[in-house]
Picture (spheres, rainbow, N blue to C red):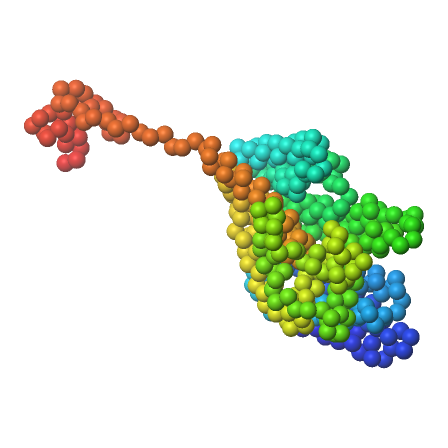
Length: 472
């Protein structure tokens, strides 16, 4: 309840602020509280484990808390058409309420590090498969024309790097040195240099988070979480520098095509969520009544097969958020909160609390079930990697919504499903034991369990004399 009480302070501060600072002080304070709350839940939830709920709240700290601070400090005032204060306040109370009701049970209490182990044979198989997938993705990326390149190619590389990381898990014979981490790190570098095209930088963050989950499962959970929080600011600065465009563009260039500091994709979705709030207040935002969730559920169906397939939320929002780009391939993002607002209005933010709370806790149970103390089969490794894909997908979920989550996580799971099918197809079936004819009375019958060899006797009903004597 302490976080709810702290949330009342920005509301009080907002009512006492001067006219020229209306909304500014409250937005800044709500931004600080959102950052602290998201990081606190990430640190607390699951103890030494990195959880799905923790990853989702880490995204909340970045895409809501940090974004609110950035927008408030950049603008300096509260513009009526962009109600930043209301946007961050609604996001904060929805997030805290979800945590209080659904994420504070026994399963969230601090526990010892979950030590996940495997066998040397399974670990070697996972590393070989990972190297093969990464090499195949690189080959396709470099050889195919751009029009034939598909998200499945980078997804194969993504899964390949995670499977390289499985080699970090302790085995029944040894505990691999962290120096082996240079292997998946090298895979991450290859992914960045060849498969990454400077768009979708969150993919790099998700891939780094996936490797951190594996390292945490070695039994080093708390130190890993501490290192992740420590390296988050320089990592954000590095990823921002990739897209930064300090040179001013020609007049008339859309804001989305010119990113002076490289942070637009981080802070832009929160800004668009605030804009959706304003449109909703004016009655200019229609309710989709769940259409975006249906579109996300069928997003992997090729449009060549289904021409009238529903468009994803990002494309649907363009006429409302970027009307000058309507009719192009541009896509907008307005956070997971914006998706619920677009579908059901303000009531959708209330409905979001139980559905998101239950769904993420159920996803975390799946992750826990796949993170077994001993992963002794190849199928177990594939299930473990699938669970990690689900976990890191929480970042995509809060950043954009279900469409991006379904497309990215769905393609990665398709790669794992293909691996599972290939493994099932080529795995050796158990060798059938040929039927043996009954022994004849005139030849010796071996009895390996009894350690004797005797001759069957017709008078004994085919049972050797030595056996009858032992059974008496």
